Image 1: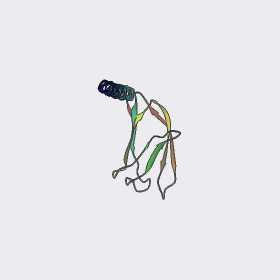
Image 2: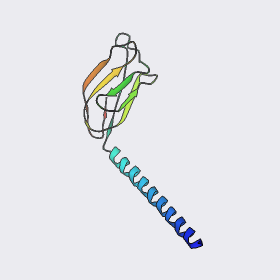
Image 3: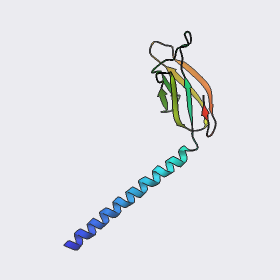
Image 4: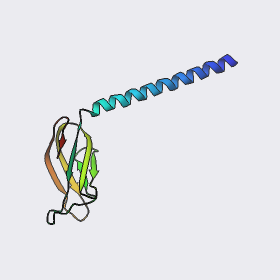
Length: 111
């Protein structure tokens, strides 16, 4: 009976070890993939006054990626694959703006 418990315990530890190794492999793989991506950053200001706008939503059209502007109107959308994108910029009280033709080149920041 004792050897059965030891065998079960050994297999549970082995299963945990395999799961940890798989998790480490996934994290490592994702970090290598992220290195080929870039980021889109910028500043959103009021067109009339030139004041930075806080809390503006900046989204990449047809993706789940986006960011909100900070107190200085700045935003950064990290981990964006190289390509051409359309940004959707929206805030309550302002007309939604579309900025198409944002091109992200590998390992660069597009502004």
